[in-house]
Image 1 (cartoon, rainbow, N blue to C red):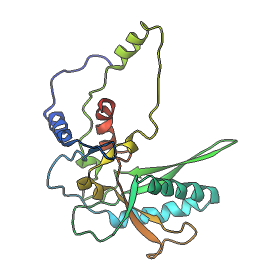
Image 2 (cartoon, one colour):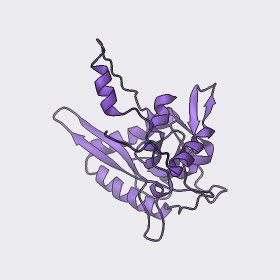
Image 3 (spheres, rainbow, N blue to C red):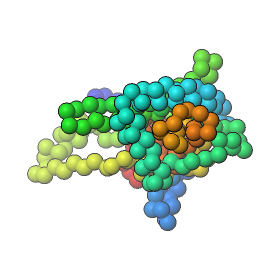
Image 4 (cartoon, helix red, strand yellow):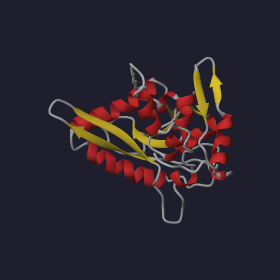
Length: 222
């Protein structure tokens, strides 16, 4: 809101160029996008060990209340059924991969207990860059909020709507999926052993990192 510089930032232009690769799958009736990396080839650590340690910590927290674990596990089961995520071989024939840490955020009320799964794209070791740092932040393509508020006052009727799981409706290109790997349990009632921990990755755009925000204006125009 307020006065903004209209000059194009070269970095934003490069980010926009990345979105020229947007494709549309007629069979699925879904758009697919790639993650907007700043440089190629992508050179980021796998973060496998960090993601596993965070998994152990997360499971410990979730087991403090049986309802937490039940609801958290149900999130991934629902996403598997909807083909938002997919189970994968942990040993791919490529080096460019990254495992993301995740944790549960609990909201308690008198009637309900809600839990969200939040992925951490900022996880890194001191000597490396995080996934967030290697992705472009969004160029501002959205209408100015002040202009919107002024225009709607001139209309007799104003309607708002909310798109359910907006980011999860946008497909993630095959080339970008291995950067969204994560660990979870096959059986939530068993421990974080090798036989019970499996790897997944996203087939859709996960929310909560810079690339999600980078996609925001493009989702509005798709």
